[in-house]
Structure formats: structure tokens, C-alpha cells
Length: 261
Image (cartoon, rainbow, N blue to C red; front, side, top):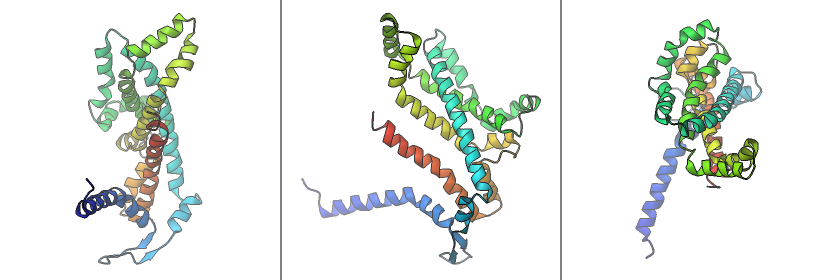
């Protein structure tokens, strides 16, 4: 039966409210990044300008360097933890003590990143890693690697192992097994894990601040810094940059992962 006009109106209204609820915060952040004056109690801003965006795009501000630093750290953490977790997850999935080894992979998540980082701070100090980008990468990789192991330990199963054994039975080498079977069937899983570990690193604040000692100025650090200074317009601009990679990853997930599932 066709829907009545009342039901159609209700569905359209509900959909409009959901869409507004989802995109409203992003529209607000983008709009706020163009505001230069919004005194209380004015309902609308008094003046707008593209100066903040122009300054950022020309590279004259600190946001550009923070953005690319965060991007570099997140890409390294995601690539390292995904590739290492892929192999480690396989080893654990087929090990006779799988439950114990998988439990150890959950250890970094027993406590918060800041508390665990504080417990390991002595090691970072002795290794002269505090206040350095390398130290931040190692600290973030510790958590992303644990996630990757848990993720891939569920991926490896008896069916995939049987396919791998079939390659060896037909005379193929380890390289052939990965090139012709294992990597093609795990492409989507690798992409999903890479996206997830990238986001783990991208939004990391507490551990980065602790291990980086405030010297590694990633984008989340800059956002909190601007918020603490009550510099809402710079905070809005930094927040726009902060949500850009997750938005692109969401599009990539829909375009390259879920489309092929």
C-alpha cells in the first residue's frame, strides 16, 4: 500500500532532523572558523573573514606544521601496527596457547593510555625518547599494535589456513602464498585495520602530551591549546583540520571497502 501524505511528511521530517543533527556540528565549526567577531549577546556573528584560512593555506601559521606532523605520525603508526599485527595475529591464531597470548595483547587496554605511559615514563627517559617524535610514535604504536593483533587474530581461521596449505601442496612458496592467496583475500581487513589504527593515533591526546612533553605539537594538542586559551576561532579552524582525515577515511571505506564486500 502506498504511504499516506502524513507518513511521508513524518519520514521526511525525521530524515531532515537526523541529517541536521549529523552535519550540524561540522557546519558550525566551518562557519565559526570564518568568524572574526561574535560579541555577547549577539545571536549572529558581526563580521566574517577568510584571513585564518588564508594564513593557514599559505603556511604562515603553526597549524599546517601540526597537521602534517600528525599525519606523518599517524601514517607511520598505522602502517607499522597493521603490518606487524597481521603477522602476529596469524601466529597467535594458530598457536596452542592462543588464549594466553591474546590476553597479553589486551594488556595495554587494562589501564588508560596516560596511566600506562606514566608507568613506562622511566624507560622513555632512560632511552632519551621523551619530547621526541620517535618516542610519541613508539608510545602510540604500543596501543595500535595491540588493537591490530586482536583484530587479525579473529581474521585468521581454518579456511584461510587450508587455502595457504593448498598453495604449499601445489608446490608454491611462502611468497606465492601471500601474493596469490593471503594478501588478496585479506585486502579489506588490512584496509579496515589501517583506518582504525590511523584514527587511534590521529585522535591521541593524553599519551602524546605525556611522552611528547608538550614539544611534539600534534593537531589534537593544538586544538586543546586553543580551547584553553579561549581562542574559539583558531580552535574551530584546527577542529576542521582534525575532522578532515576521518571524513576522507569514511569516504574511502565506502568507496573501496564496503563496495567490494
